[in-house]
Image 1 (cartoon, rainbow, N blue to C red):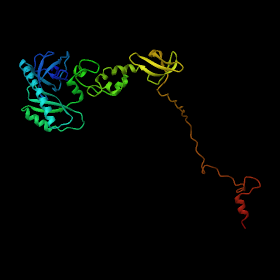
Image 2 (image 1 turned 45 degrees about the vertical axis):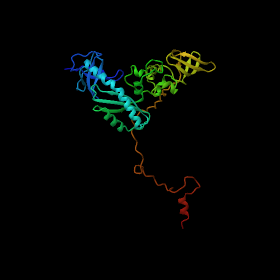
Image 3 (image 1 turned 180 degrees about the horizontal axis):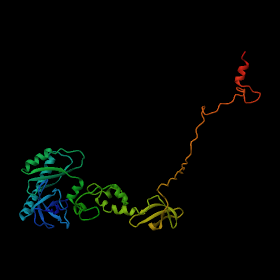
Image 4 (image 1 turned 180 degrees about the vertical axis):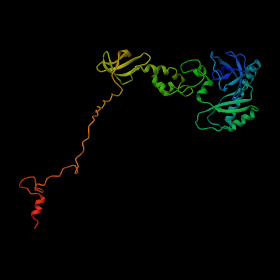
Length: 330
């Protein structure tokens, strides 16, 4: 039987996970279902029912156990009412243990109350020892299995919610962002945003997630414009690019004896060429087939005739060393 995969979310702004509906006859978007996860039994809501569902070939998808009943919803609410008491006791015990920098953020029971997850954050990068806190929470809320885990500053801001820096009533992480992506300072530079820390960081102390919203669009539009300090030809003469207006697709050029002028990208021509000039090809020598001639050797040379002038100096009136030596011989 082909598997039908749906997306289930356990928190309003949490990540959606995929499950198989082979055990359930019919599932609609918005239905609450009971599923088994690595953190025990959970109650989630179906948020996506694709027209062309994915097909499970290796059987790796977990299955939905059943559609949640009214009794299941009441049970989930009863456990949620106890989570506030868990947070208060965990914070009080952390203060008694003098755990500096540890902030208890949230507490969450599983659907059937068999597991209790307590989340915390810390400002220091050093590892904090929480064995004593976990042991005390385990004794206080037995028989539930207590798990204490750390979350990042962005997840903390997502839990507390609040007004965004742009003026929206709720921040993006608490409204529609279900997952966090990597944000770099390069995104702010590419969009021409001021690098003042107070203007590019959110309440979480990290770079704002909204820096990623228009980054790809800016990169695509910047490729059609020349970079700064490039030489360009304009209708008013040659000049140097000092700034660009990406969204308006215009370029500000500094022209000698004229000053700065703004032009449309279609009105300028780039003069600087970054591509290396082609190298001149070396001339190819044609190969000519020649017959090698043998070098003269002593054996090939004919014997010289003896004319009686051996040892004579080539110049007249001059005697060679051999003749001098012979004349001095007694």
